Figure 1 (cartoon, rainbow, N blue to C red):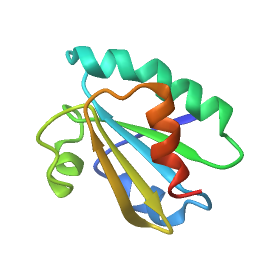
Figure 2: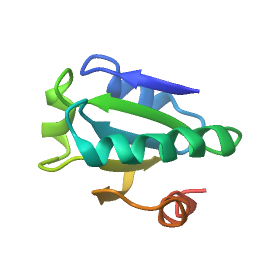
Figure 3: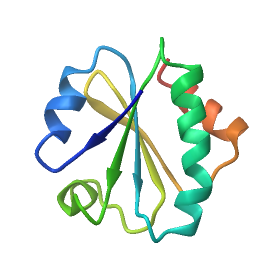
Figure 4: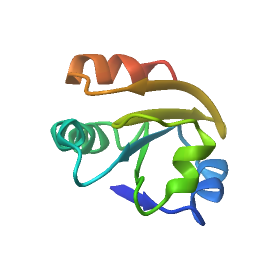
Length: 105
């Protein structure tokens, strides 16, 4: 299951997560975001027991994007224990996406 986060829900969600959290920052008008989205969805399903996945629409939640210095989307943020451990910018293939999240598992 993927949780849609807002400016208001982001911090509490990250701090209270019992597993590492992958956050996909995206926008509906972004082509690379639309290419990455099915991979993130599949990863959320395949790794549900090890990883929590959330998405942030940067148009609806600009404060989250600003807080993490997101200037380009898609951007993936990886959190462990409530702390940012890594960041990935742009489209990545599934193999790279799995390697990216493996750092926190």
